[in-house]
Image 1 (tube, rainbow, N blue to C red):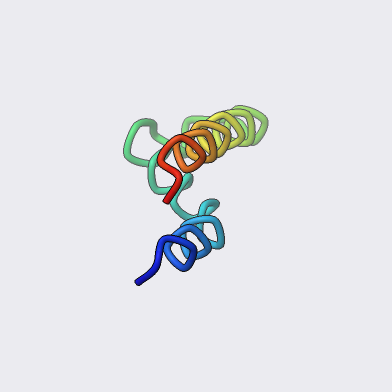
Image 2 (cartoon, rainbow, N blue to C red):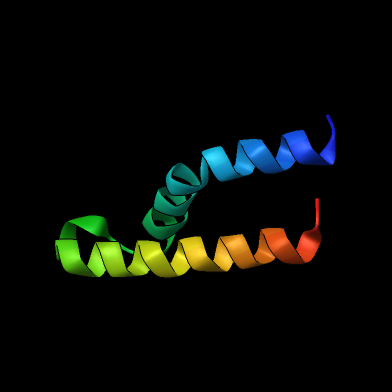
Length: 56
């Protein structure tokens, strides 16, 4: 799989990946919706930065 194809797959699924990461770190049932959204936004930004740094 080429780097471009890999990047597209990761970017297309970044929201799902972010939810899994958050769920592994925190108990979503104990978080408010605003906390969940804020945390997901932070995780997505971090993932996008990592993708950009890796240049894959």
